[in-house]
Image (tube, rainbow over all chains, first blue to last red; front, side):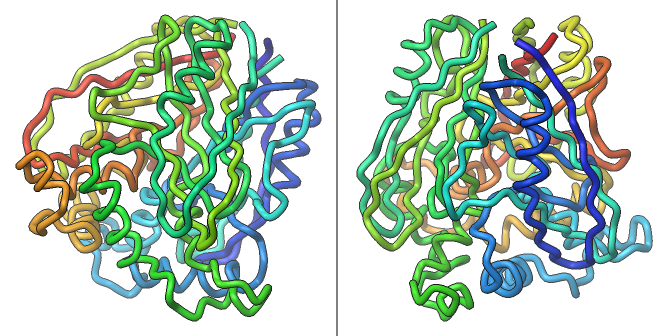
Length: 140
Length: 140
Length: 140
């Protein structure tokens, strides 16, 4: 049994940039040398999120953004804005809701995912950001 | 330390079938022979979800469905529908929101769960489906 | 590779008490003696939730509560209430949505978290509760 931490970086666009990170996570698993186990995919920060979706333009460019904007709109006077004078209250709430990590199984060095299931990073901040994604891989 | 992958299958009903999978997950843990560790419960696919709830009819047959229908209604013209000509845009968004996996601890071969806390699979697709659930078990 | 289960207890206030548990989780990791790995932070029960947020008063005392109250209000006639005669239907739905666990990576005995990213427990029940939080720590 071994633990290997591999990381990769993203350059995101503001306000609901949805990025397919399946290949980077698969690469992190492959180069770990671990055959069977789990990978904990995690972003350090409080305005990003990790989940899965079918990565096609209708969902990625429209439906996800409309849904999140409906339940947590950017243009609102969140109390968070009064604490620091910034305007990313919605980003924090979206990240809390969608969570900053998800854990996936792999077998024979391959992630166990459906054909139309991709691992995504969602930029919830209102600004473009550099993001570091941590893949903590455990197995044997 | 060992890794064991056990799986089981479900036959679901369409549109918010909530299935108690606690016993199947417990069986997967029991037959792994691992005493203490974690189990990553995962569905491969982009229109299912894993979470926990008190499995009683009021929540399972009514409240969960009403809540999901309120925030992500099925009967809407999602852009996803234009990509493939299908109609499960709501299912994809529900799955992204609720996530396709959750990881649970166990001790002495027993899942650590509250008395009224059951592990559930939620069918978010509009069609009945066959689902394969992966239990990646790690521990010693 | 080792597995260590450490726990701690919380005394919560009712209806959306948001508690910063970062230090307790870090202590659980530190005293495990494990250098690199993951920690599965889990509450047994069906009306609590684990996530992360920037722990500052605007979000913690106002924005989170307003958001959850908007999408899952307490004062509604949930069918769950008819099953047991209690009134915590909203608490169950919030817990299902936000989930009762999250898994985090650590390196050199330190949780990998952003500067403004704290691990939180959210009390979703309408009553003050005693909560036991389980930290299942796996690594080497």
